Length: 373
Image (tube, rainbow, N blue to C red; front, top):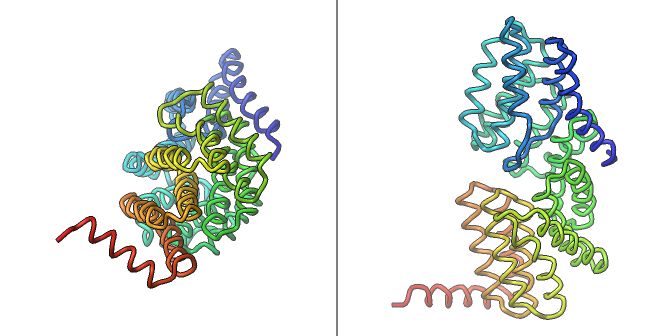
């Protein structure tokens, strides 16, 4: 999906709305507003015209009443609430839309139910989501998105990878929001499976999409993560360019939750030059911020990076503390896949790096120090 094509689509959508208003035809304006609201991607913490378009379209669809159009607008509003983490509000919107089920076609009903399953996945109601999806058209790209998210949250990484791959093949190219999320999910799965080359490929595709939609906070976070992967693969020139871009963007688009990310490139380069303490401090700061923002890929990348720095320096106790803290945060945030990955890193530290006896003795010393007799 060329970035220029995506940028062109979004530019057209922005221009189409005022042009349609100028025509003075309510039906044309309603169609244009609905199309723009459905195809313009929404991100949790980014400003968007979608809310205003939906409100304007809803008013037009109510006078005179166009129940089917109103239902579609309400489902899209539920998706917007879902992306912002407003899950109870999303479910209420879907319940409102469902009152128009008799006038919907099969595709619209599938969209509604698949969206409800996605909300339930985010609420960790995985059994409810699975039951909802069992009776839906498995070939629908909307259903594939929901099935992939359910598989990922359930820890079924092979099924998640297969589903997201099929999703990207089935997605209409205009579905920018889902294409970016699919690439990010495949990148996360690759990171969990220890496949950095595959993760790079998917993150680069996601980064192209993020740049095209000008979602700069996630562009910065993804550039940092990519730079770290390229560093690990020995591609230092590529890594330096990505870090420099991230730092420049963080200066041009400052935002408190993302300020540390612009410094991460410097931190990783400091690590290459043996300046471990500075790199660790910046990485931990970024990890905390990413955890608050819900960025799984960035959070995992930062913690694993810090643990590797400590391990390389022979500071095994610090590596363990970092990973164990990450496990505790993942449990608190209900991120089972992150918890599994970090536990695997702890197991690697125990069994491959230190040896079980030395590792267990180290953990006991840490416990004794934390809880003296």
